[in-house]
Length: 534
Image (cartoon, rainbow, N blue to C red):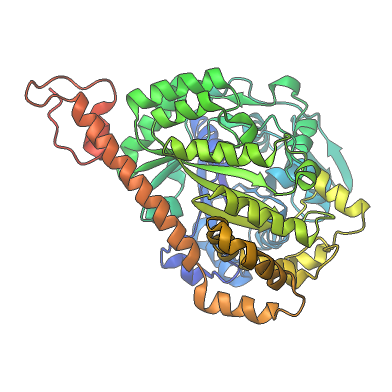
C-alpha cells in the first residue's frame, strides 16, 4: 500500500506556494503523522507526505497530486477544527483528480466524526488513536474490503453511517517505533532553520487536566481508555530516541519537550532528568503548569539544564481561571513560582488568553498587569477560540455569545460583554507593549501611583482609534517587540551553553585523558570542544 499523509500546517493566511518553494522554513512537525508513518513503514507500506505550509489553491494542489501522488492508494489527513474547510476542499480535489479514498484523524475527526464524513466529504474518520486502525484499514483495502469492524473507524456506506466500536489504543508506548522525522524535510521546518536549531520530542500522550478550552476531556470520553488515558514512554526509551535524533541532526542546540505538562509524574520526571543530565545534557525547554511546579521539581529542572519554561497562566482574574477549569492558584502563587524559576536561572515564557465568555475589559487588563508584576522574560497572548467539543464552546453557545462567522471576519468569535471586538483586537496587538509599560510602572512605585490610573484610562477609552493603531503596529512594528524578547531569552540560552561547556571541561581531565561518562562524548563534540575521549 502507498499512503500519502496530508498535513495542513499554516499560521500565516498570506503564505503562498511561492513562499513554501523558497524554503522559508514555515512548517512545523506533526507527532501524529510521524508516529503513523513509522508504524506503516515498519509493516512494509510506502509513505509519502504533502506538507501544506500555505493556503492551498485548486490548480497548484492538483498539480502536486499529479506530480507526487500517482501511486497513492490512500490519502490521510491529520487536522483540527481550524483547518476543516481547507481539508474539505482538498478532499474534493483529491476525489476529482485521483478518485482515491481519504481518511481523517486528529482532534476534529475524533470529536466530530459524523461531520468529518458528511460535511467535509472524507471517506473514513478515525476516532482516537490510529496506529492499529491504519494498519487494518490498509490490510482491508489490499483485500478489496471496506472498513466494517475496524475499531476506531467510522465510515459512510452510501448514506448509512457505519459506526465501528471505539476505544482501541496503544497501552505501552515503548512498543512503538521512533517518530519518523525522516518524513519531513528539515529545510522547511522552523525548528531547524531558526537561529537556534532545536529538536521537538513528545514523551507523553494526553493530559490529566480538563481545561475548558482544551479537547482533553472530550477526547477522554471518545477514546474510552479510562485511567490509561495518560501514558508515557519510559525514561530509557526517551533517551534512546533523543540519541538517535541527535545523531541525525547534529546542528541541534536545544531540546523542546512538547508535552502539555511533562512534570505531572514527579518520580518518572526525576528518573528521566537524571538520565538526561548524564547522557544528553543539552539545554532544554518545556511547557508547565503553576500547580504542578514545586521547589523539588524546579530544582530537578535547573540541575538538568532547563533553559526556559513556557508557563500557561491564562488569566489574571481568579474568576476567569475558574471559568477555564484550571487548577486553583492565587496570584501570589503564580508570581512566587515565576520568581522561584528565575532564581534557579530558568527563563519564564508566559501565555495567556483574552476574551473568555463573560470576561470584562477590567479582567483582561488585570491579566496584562499580572504578567507585568510577575516580570516574565517573554509574554504572549491569544484571543479565545472555543473549539467544537470543548466545554468553553458549549458555555459560549449556551450564553449566546459565540459567533462562528466572526472567527473569519475579525478573529473575535466570542462577543465581548462590555467592550467592542476592536478593543479586544487592540489589547491583543498591543499586549507585549502594554506588559512592558506596566512592568516599568510596577518597578517605580512613586511614579506608578500617578501614571497607572492614567494608563488604565487610556487603555479603556472607547475613543482610542483602535483600527488605526493596529494598522500602524502591523505596518511598522510587527514582530519587533517579540524578537527583542526572544533575543533576551536566546542570550540566556547562550549563557547556559557556556556554563555547560565549563561543566564538561571540569568532568574531562584532558591532561590525564580520563574517559568521558556515558553520553558526554557526543555532547562535547556538539558543543564544539576538541576533547580527546580516550
